[in-house]
Amino acid sequence: MADPDTDPTRSDRTVLDARDISRALTRISHELLERNKGATDLVLLGLHTRGVPLARRIADKIAAVEGAPVAVGELDVTMYRDDLRSQPTRRAHKTALPPGGIDRKVVVLVDDVLFSGRTIRAALDALADLGRPSAVRLAVLVDRGHRELPIRADHVGKNLPSALAERVSVRLAEIDGTDEVTIS
Amino acid sequence: MKHLLSIDDLSVDEIESLFATAADMHDVQRREVKKLPALRGRTVVNMFFEDSTRTRSSFEIAGKWLSADVINVSAKGSSTSKGESLRDTVLTVCAMGVDGLVIRHPASGAAVQVSEWVDASVVNAGDGTHEHPTQALLDAYTLQRRLGSLEGRHVAIIGDLTHSRVFRSNVQCLTKLGARVTVVAPPTLMPSGIAAWSAAAGFETSYDLDAVLPEADAVMMLRVQRERMSGAFFPSAREYTVGYGLTRNRLALLKPDVPICHPGPMNRGLEIAADAADAAQSVVLEQVSSGLAIRMAVLYHLLAGEEA
Image 1 (cartoon, each protein chain N blue to C red):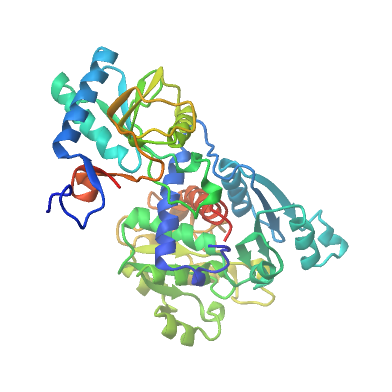
Image 2: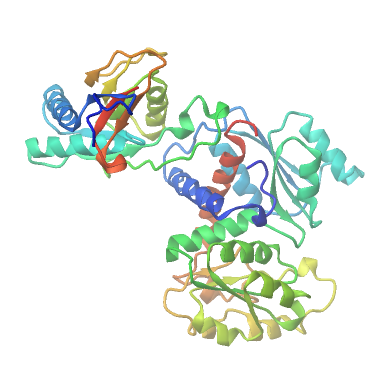
């Protein structure tokens, strides 16, 4: 593949490549362990679509450090969105909690891009219907700003100042066949 | 999707998409808080001009779990019994700002007719002997969960075909999903003109239940609908059971673990013996919980998105 920075046919710019993404996730994994003082009672919940593989990767990294598996699940917030009425019907995805549930656990929501904050607002509502975690934290690969709600991330892979009109795309090997974050 | 009137209106993709949503909705039944906010602020009216327990309560619960406001109107105790026409009743209710109208009516074609009168999304919950699309969807969904893909699987539908809207919707739904369908009934309960239809739609007919059962991958028993029978379609209940009931002896003809469906309400001892209804491979109660998931999926797909 041509280098995107010099390829004139591509209008987008790579801000994170595969190694950057891996390093960011490794750092987030260590931050989570440090903050939580270990992996006990930690539950990683990936938000559909690309938060799910990210949560699994962080879980793998934590397991490699701690030597024990960490609970991981997936959360779909489609039904809780505030924009259902203004879009064509969205297809829902699966919500799968780990066997221990989320009651009295430290839940870490994992998503690819933090933007308006509305997805996280929906996720917090969804969590309230699923149980009562002792704490909820947020880890994102990219924070691109432009929040519309009082929400912030606890762990950020990369802060990416962006113009509202710009488009940030996260591609992950599990879904898109390649690992990169681009802005266009 | 604006209305759900007939299985015929649905593409295979739309059916698969409803099944995918239903699978997510299924998990809600196991949750402590059985509530999703997707249809908050939407109003659904169940209009039932025929008796019903499972379909009506299933639609009611489905709407409530999606946070819609659900109102039930039944023919008994409504203005219909004062002589109001269907059109006036429907228009009156819809003038109250209704978003979804779930209708069951003894006249075939009632749901299609109503959909032409109103702006609300109309769901056909059974119209006469014509169609019952959500039942067909939930049956196919239940079987798919048990058997995996229905492609090439052989489903036997047995019983009172003449009066069955469930059979008419099911044949369409199952053949769309690639299943091989054989329908079995006594000659008096085989609908007239079925030869042309079965040739066009690609399903088989038979009068011999004992020959079909050993071949089936799934068995769907239909209720003998005495309330729709004006004449004598068979000499006695016992004779029907001997020829076409799923009895204990016939249970032994089935391949192991073949799922047994019945849309309910069951006439135990007539079309289905207690041994079959309560057998380990009976999916009758699973059909009920699938029905809830399917109806949530239907209401979600019709009412959650932007107005078409």
